[in-house]
Length: 242
Image (cartoon, rainbow, N blue to C red):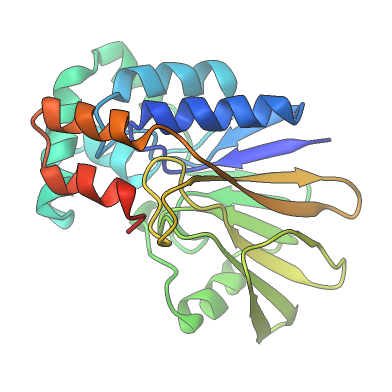
C-alpha cells in the first residue's frame, strides 16, 4: 500500500494543488491529512474542499480547534489569531461542522497519527527539544507516529526505550526493531528555511518513508494574502520558509 501524508496546509491553495498533483503522479492508494488545513492563508474554503475530496483520513489541528472554540485564539500569536478570526468569516456553518467531526488521533495496526504530539493531543504540544521527543515516545505503543504542527520535517528513531537518535529528514527504511516519530513537515507554510511544500510517502514492507519537496507559485499565494488584508508577515515568510 502506498500512502501520502500531508499536514499544515494553512489555506495555501497554490501549495496544496501542487502537492496533490505531485502525489497523484506517484499513484498512491490513500492520502492522510494531519490537520491545520486552515489558518494564515487566503483560501480556507477551497483548501477544505480539496482535502475533503482527496483524503480518506483528516485530523483536527489547533487552527481548526481555534475556529470552533474562539477562546483558544488567546493562546495564539496576534497574526495567527487575526487570521483565524478572518477565516471564521469565510466559512459556512456546514464547513465548520465538517472540521468539528475530525478526530485528533487516528491509530492503525502499527501506526499512530496526531497533529501535534501523542501526549495529550488536544493540548497541541510542540516537539522541539530532545526531551520533548524522548517523552513523546512514552505515549504511543505503535512502531511509528506521524505528526506535524512545528512545520519542520524531522525523524527520531528509538533504538531501545530511552535511547534514540535524531535522523536527517530524508528517505529511510524502517527497522523492525526500532520505533519512530516522524514530522511530515508543512504543505502551506514551511519553517525549515526551504519554501518548498513538503509531504511524505510511505511504501513497502518493511515500510520506506520518503520526504518530498514541491515547488509552487509562492507569489500568487502571497498576493492573495495581502489582497485579503491579512498580516503582511504571513505573506513574506512564505518566500523564506521561516
